Length: 243
Image (cartoon, rainbow, N blue to C red; front, side, top):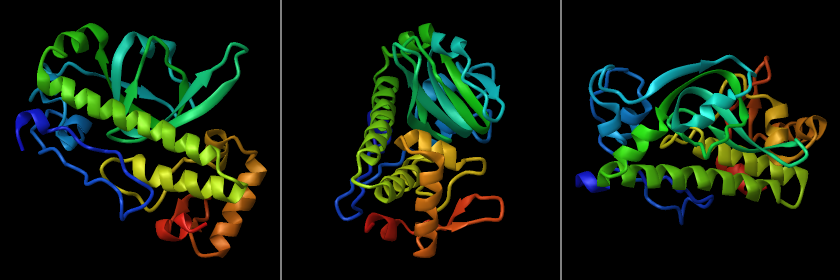
């Protein structure tokens, strides 16, 4: 695969028979062993091989803490560890959860940054001016286009889940979306520790109690399991698609 086509095609259909093939970029050496850019094989010219050469800075966020408004001054962020739920704030100050981004996912910023951490989070932030200078290179531009498409696909799929015809289907579609998009290019069979029922409810516009009842139905049907601390495990994606 040429340098110009190192980027990932991360758009995944709910139907495995019609889903696009995922093109995985070749990994490259980076200073941090868990570097999301190196793992996905993207943005190599920004990451570099040493900490001094890397254009990204690392930021941490404690569990359930809101995204600092200062993050909006950056161009983009890559989630390194944990999960970030993005929110839109309307003119009256009401927050709507629109996206859940896990390790390897892009967080696009357009001057605003709203959301919160699900569990402890580490992200890598790229300054806006550095990003804009790098866009002159075809490789970085292609990588960013692919990552932005993946971020848009996450939002669109969560919107689709929110519009399902029943509460049970909303929860099932939400679980499928999270399993297939939280940790690209890997498809998960669980949700990360710290992901709570209220997080699911915020993403699909349902009350906590309604989400709890729906999860109970899905658990009784053998489509998921819940640990003693409430973590969602052993998702049956084929079964959830049939709900």
